[in-house]
Amino acid sequence: MNETLSRLVDSGVVAVLRGVPADQLIEIAEALREGGVTAVEITADTPNVAEKLGEVAGSFGDEVVVGTGTVLDSETARTTLMAGAEFVVSPSLHEDVIETCNRYGAVTAPGVMTPTEAIRGYEAGADFVKVFPAKTVGPDHLGAMKGPLGQIPMMPTGGVGPDNAADYIDAGAFAVGAGGALVDYDAAERGDYESITETAREFTRVVEEARDD
Image (cartoon, rainbow, N blue to C red; front, top):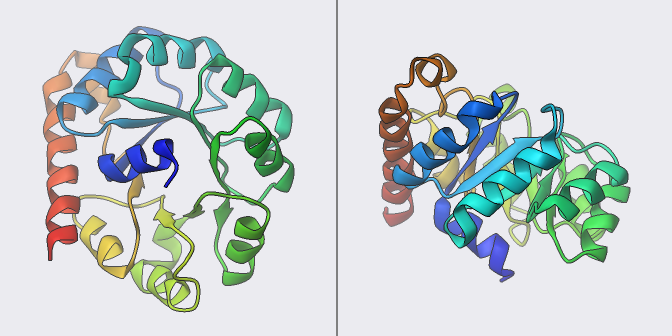
């Protein structure tokens, strides 16, 4: 297994950070790391995303694997990879993004909803697929796709929280992606990073217990 993908598996939870103020980014990433979430996805629509990626990657080294989310074109993929992103995730299927990531040896995942999209993305060279938005279809849909497509690693994102993360792991997900249910931006604004750490601990505990069952 690719080393970066292995690190995503080890984390079990990928934190999706969208529009985080620059002065909170490092603190949020540290709070997540302390809670066991060691994979962070900074969305490409974040202002100065390349600079922020570089800051996080430089601050944590091998302790946190940093990637880019919401990547819609090859130019954005290349820019963020050059800034230090180790994986690239899209909300939809863009074969040019997959091609660019393969060219630079980076892990990549398109967003998919159907078996057809999943197999197209995987055949194009994706390392895994993001089932998105997961809340629209639920764990049963992911499990149904894993039946005939067991060879494709799948990660649900969108509406995943501590209350249903185990259901997705049980359905065959190798990890889960989470945004608002994981990172309380109001708490960060107050400087209450410990609450983010506690939520991260709960997420990772749920995933670990589901894997052990």
